[in-house]
Length: 73
Image 1 (cartoon, rainbow, N blue to C red):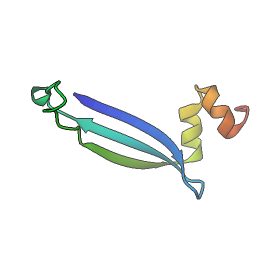
Image 2: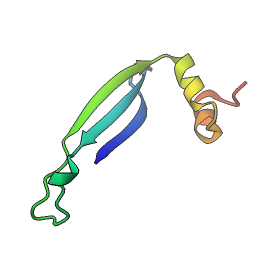
Image 3: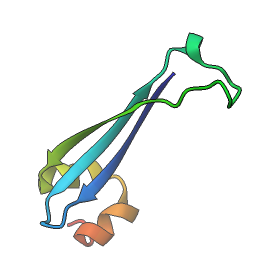
């Protein structure tokens, strides 16, 4: 079982970063009962993005793009 999730963030100084959470568990170790299951260990990776990179990533998502950058021209 593998878990990947990411968040786009803007730091207090205006820098754009993406936070990537990754977790993995061997399915043989998976026990569906809560009392025996172990939590998945999450590893975080942070990557800096330029504004150009972020614009390209969000170009297909106008609902997110517009509040950040305006009308997209």
